[in-house]
Amino acid sequence: MSDLAKTRRKNTLRLLAEKMMSKKMLAEGIGVTPPLISAYLSKNPHKAMGDNLAAKICNFLGVTLRELDTDQDFIDSIIRDSAPIFSDSAIKTEDKYVLIPLFKNVKPSYRNNYLNDNNQEVEMIPFDGKKLLIRRILKNNVQALITNGDSMLPIIPHGAQVFLDRTRNTVQRDGLIYVICMGELVLVKYLFRLPNHGLRIVSANSNKDLYPDVILSKDDVNSDNFHIIGQVFHVDYELPF
View 1: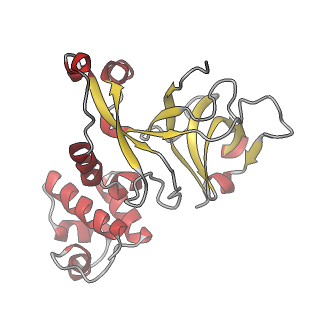
View 2: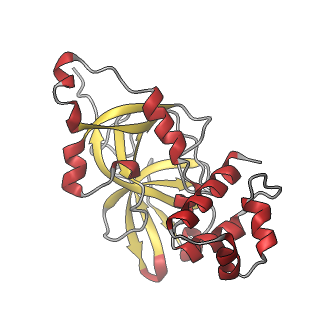
């Protein structure tokens, strides 16, 4: 069974327990037989949960596919095993900081719309918890990655750390910056809404010959080749000297 299928099984069982629901109730809710659900959720399952069943379970339990597919135990294990050693001065204010996963070499998982792959290189880095509190962002919803290229100059330089809230994956207001998966690419871009539920993808760099706008139709936006991973709310980079 794949890691993704194991994560889906584990999260489904956790959600059922939290909602005080039985497997039989889940089976009735999504229109399948209890034995079929047991084949996916039993202690020794012999079926791996695919995208169609996962979507039905998400709809019934009122969660997103990202929530079902996120292995929070994996993130928590990294926090436990990779906690940085703070300096003496930092220890005095350690309670002000939280640890955020930084995906150093991002490999897009765009079909499942999440950055959570055991094969990726992840480092836990400290982040000012006050900035999350002010913006009402939960630390478990934050991920970071390192930019590559000049398409977002002068706003975001090459090699910057961008921090995103992965729960904000719809465009509520034009001109905000998002991390998106498009095909095999992970990109940091402005997004603007278009009529008929399309999107315009815009680089900050004014050289449109190198970085032209990209127009997506409604079908493009809803395809498996495009997903919004999250909204960028903070950028950290060192000034050249």
